[in-house]
Image (cartoon, rainbow, N blue to C red; front, side, top):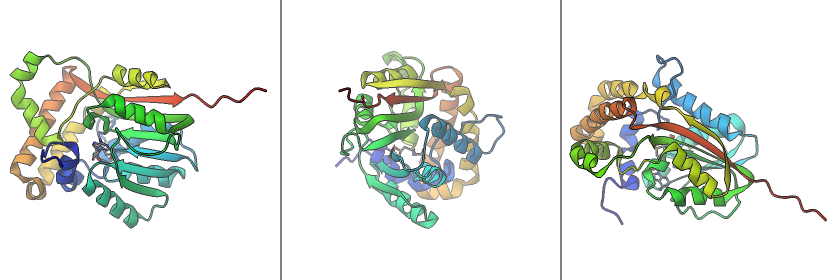
Length: 283
Ligand SMILES: C[S@@+](CC[C@H](N)C(=O)[O-])C[C@H]1O[C@@H](n2cnc3c(N)ncnc32)[C@H](O)[C@@H]1O
């Protein structure tokens, strides 16, 4: 078992309660169409973008890879009549998601501790695979997308949104800015960004037909202001959960990421892709 607290499962075990105060129930960025919306409106808008791309219909079976506290899973199960299986490598995440779902009395939603890069489900056992802001926590993105494609039924869809890299960061820059990258690692755990084009290329390589590739960088930028405001408003509770160093690393990370968003280094994107429908047999 890993003793590295930056490894995503250990990191999410540690930060889950604090994240609910800092990020809200939905553990992802917001899309701010007007710029002045509160955080929960922005995070719901990003979930809506994923819903649009996923083309959800009652009775479909959805795999949610990296389910967080289960908020998106509950939203789509309650709103669209889909069955959702959420997975995460974090044991605390599974417990939290199960407890919240029982409280909300949402049916057809279950959670399991599994790894998105080796999920163990049967081939062709889901109609949709939903990967919401978890891919950056998986170093092996080829394995992630291969698994998504494998478990999709013919005609099924993968939708993925995440932080993306807009340019290569050379070794010299990594070395020069190692203190900044250490702060980001402290706040968000081990992360590895792919480009939007990289995700699309992986989907194509695994036999999926990419039909959407949206750059959401400027629409997600106000997220950092909202997170800083939450860090300020909930400082004492957050310090009690992850310590003053954890709180301060989060605030400093908001500043660093905002600067990276503005200078074109990092950003946010959404990709969707379809698995070819089964061929009807011709006699
Ligand atoms: C930023 S949170 C997003 C949570 C949720 N999708 C949401 O939007 O509210 C990232 C999630 O990915 C999970 N995760 C990290 N690595 C994973 C892996 N290899 N397999 C499955 N889940 C993983 C984390 O435990 C966490 O639940």
